[in-house]
Amino acid sequence: MKKLFLLTAIVGIFAFTNASAQKDAAMNGPKLGIGADFAFPMGDFGDISKFGVGGSLLYQHPVAPNLNLTASAGYLSFKYKDIIGGGNSGFVPVKVGARYFVAENFYLNGELGASFGTGDFNDGTAFVYSPGIGVEFPVADKSSIDLGARYEGWSNNGTLSFIGLRAAFNFGL
Image (tube, rainbow, N blue to C red; front, side, top):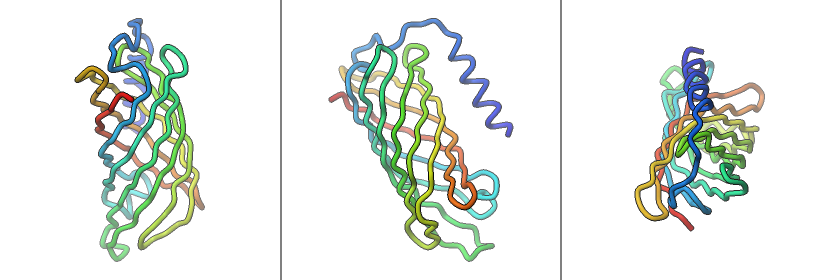
């Protein structure tokens, strides 16, 4: 709960800035990002799982001056604790959403989608919801480094939730 409160406070700070977003060439136009994902389970999911790692692709397409539509797909592998026999389980989350730049390079995002279970503990398909925040740092003409944090919940006969961190490199298309 403390982490969620901290995340909300940080979002509030960025929401009240008045800088104009996306002035840099690296911040304009469609982008494809390739990233590494890290997941830290919470609640009941944290009782059985140690952590998750994986990778993802995220496509962004601008539709308004500060608004991009997003589509993402990836893979996350979770390592389970010895209390349930250990092992790993994989998930393929597929999501669509929006990213709104509230200040130059700082954004809020939200995504909805589905997660498909694979591996030892396949729980089938789950509904996914994921609000988050992040920052993009321009590093070249049409490229940027993208660092983001999110809360992600997967609902299917209960909810699995985690705090996710993503570090990515975005290529301008």
